[in-house]
Amino acid sequence: NVGNVVSGTDLNLLSVIDFAVNYLKVPHILVVGHYDCGAVRGSLARPGDGGLGIVENWLRNIRDVARFHKNELLQIDDQEERVRRLVELNVVEQCLNVLKVGTVQRRRMQSFVRNNYALPKIHGLVFDPANGVLTKLPLDFNQLNESDRAIYDLYKIPKWLERRSSFVGTPPAKQE
Image 1 (cartoon, one colour):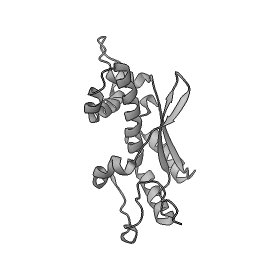
Image 2 (cartoon, rainbow, N blue to C red):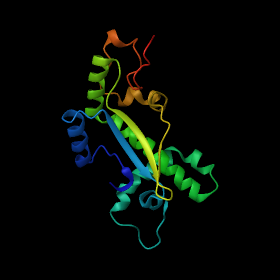
Image 3 (cartoon, rainbow, N blue to C red):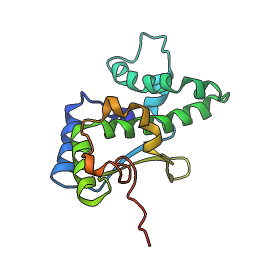
Image 4 (cartoon, rainbow, N blue to C red):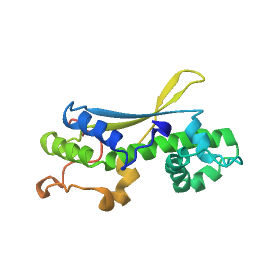
């Protein structure tokens, strides 16, 4: 979709995620952005011709990402590098939005209870059309959303599992 936005009000996206998670049992969900993204550029634009139309409402989601990370973005002097960084930050935020989806949380909890690791795993990647390189972003979801878990976690880890590895993180390393 436009800007890789994962919106809790997008019933099409939520239906696709629900089908993929509950029926196809996908073990991985990828959020893939790309540099030179028109939606990211549009979210930063202030068009003098009266605007971009209805898409402006959708781009507000990316403007929110810029607001969340404005201090970091303001430290970048080069406008093109700032846009590239916003592409990456948008992918990270949309990955977090995937983690907020109830069907994803429920499946991850079920997987964690059964296997001691949570599936589906969520991955953030950025494609560079200038050179054809696809880069996986280094994401630590434990660190990224620890302070917000009380707000967004819909399911509680059973008491008998609380001392196990983190529910949000990757599968634990095998102990030898």
